Length: 475
Image (tube, rainbow, N blue to C red):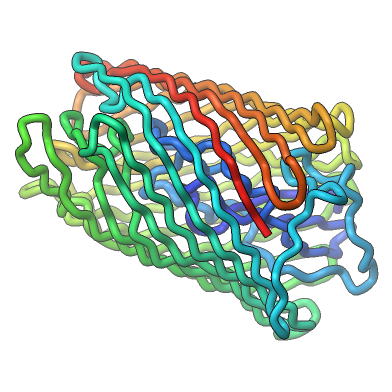
């Protein structure tokens, strides 16, 4: 059928994820990994303003508890359709993912492997570094991020690895300094022509920024945590029907942060594992219309605070349609039911109708307009254990001013309803970014982001402005 979807590799919190593309035509699928080094030039290396439970579609501001990707198409390999090996012209690819001739990275080939190193350096200004409504302090910071991507060039099967680190140093508030490091990868085994075993993993040391949904309200430093995650999925095609079933595991080990009075805030309550069993079915009704159904069951074993465990069990089921009107409109609309039963009786059970919508409209080859709406259930641990029902709407656009200049605008609204405490939050965000590709070896980017959270509990309310610039060298 004629539709396309995009997903990100496991870590959605660093804004540097690999993009995958699935194109299905009348039940036949072509898989291609969009070339990433130029497209993945960082536009937002500023402090992680993870104010939302539901991240931006780019994943740049996702918080660790919300890596729920079971309703996205499975991570797909870097292979072409044997019946149509021609590459997709740049003008037929999404604006932000295009690699125009003369701007693609060269890479270093060694045998059957290709290596793509890059180095990004930047600076940004944050108007409210502690995300506070009482103690507002501004500061500037420097960021440096080396990255090395290695992917196989085998005829069958494949492996794609990415190693990166990111260090952020503040000028006046050294308590906010942080260093992230991550190794992640995607692999696939072609069992038969229409059967594949897909796998992904991530091993990382990361930091959750001050002002995020899970960060303590009086914290003055990021919350470090170690993450180990993995997913194994079996995918099978039956002409017009495509099925997949898989298992995912995420393990979190949180460190401690510091409060304004210099006391230590222990975050061990957030340690734990999340196990998910997921399955999805897609059926191509015609060249422009398809049906899908997906279900995920999860077991969350989270320590919680004394007397307030965050352990829970639940599921989410969605069914809906996918549409693809040539290269003009692509999208997916699903509705279903969500239920999460928390062992803590003060939280109880969160359940009700659920939904997810993704739509991309391309009125011209120079403009992509994106609309997204979603609901999910997650949990936080601050001074007490709570569950959160989050609803978000996001609207954005990407415009190609020139072959090497991309302008991106986005805005969003989110409503967070808390269970286990009397609290409801409203989050407004806006994001403006410009990327200039100098040549195939370098790029310059600038961004402005505004975040405003209004909460029934005033201590959690804040607003902040983030302005920054980055320079990237790649090969």
